[in-house]
Image (tube, rainbow, N blue to C red):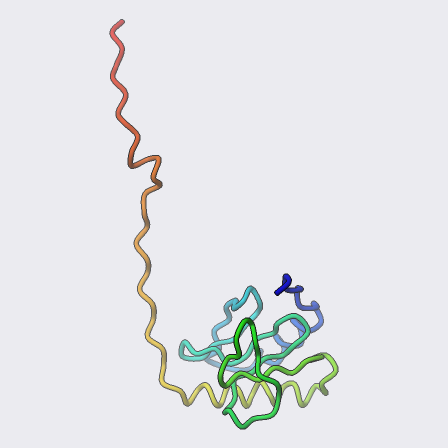
Length: 129
């Protein structure tokens, strides 16, 4: 698999606008792309030129395969070609669907490790003068 392309700024802007008035949305990055979560569950993101939304398995769209297909995620290629109303409707349907899923528990913060060089550095002895 080759390297992924960054999503066009226009697509990222459209995605941001589709989330603007939605309360409870948490913005993060997934696969290095702008994404939206509700109760810890991802429900929509952009990837390259696609809009990817989480919908019931019978929903239209192609499975999203970042390496292997992700169940419940439908990818809409050429997302900028979607009508504005259709784009917003897909994001809204995904939000509604993911809002009904059980919340994901928060992951505990990972303890910070000391750098290996700092942990193994021997103490220097003072030189007599």
